[in-house]
Length: 219
Image 1 (cartoon, rainbow, N blue to C red):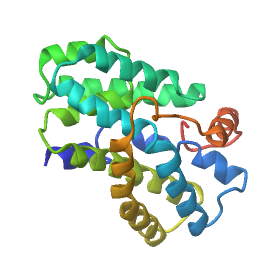
Image 2 (cartoon, rainbow, N blue to C red; image 1 turned 60 degrees about the horizontal axis):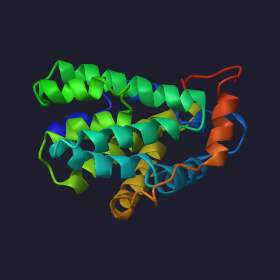
Image 3 (cartoon, rainbow, N blue to C red; image 1 turned 135 degrees about the vertical axis):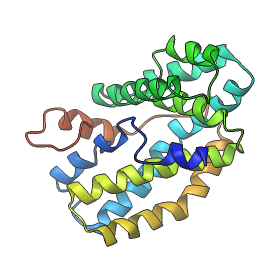
């Protein structure tokens, strides 16, 4: 139940307000159909999320569980420093702060853990890892929760920005769900030297989105 709560789009951390450059891809006609949106999000899952933030969560959950504060700070710094645009940096910071405030109002994390997180200028992956670590759920389940929450938010962004119908959104979510276990296994296999955040077209689109004339989303 705790993992379902963390995966819910209703969790008040602002994930619904971001398209992670999908809106800019729609504006530039790179994504215009259901199949295009599905292919875009599947690529983002495997080429961006699994190689970066999901790998951070995979390493941060056990770090929180064994109170390895040095490792937590290292992973948080990596997550912040590898944002490729100002708005992507602002997204992870805002969602990290919001999840920190959510944790302050719940009994899932100890006060000392919350203080450690607050001192970091927390990124969202590291804040999520703390929330997930307190559930004592298997690590794979924690990563699937993180990824499914991302997938639901991104599908809603596609529905609003392409735009698409709800049935199309469910078909895209089905495709993403089928690929999530493989993405999780890949993220679990990555070492520090293999983890990477290199998505140049996303970075370019994010920079363009910052000055996009008309937009619905913050990134």
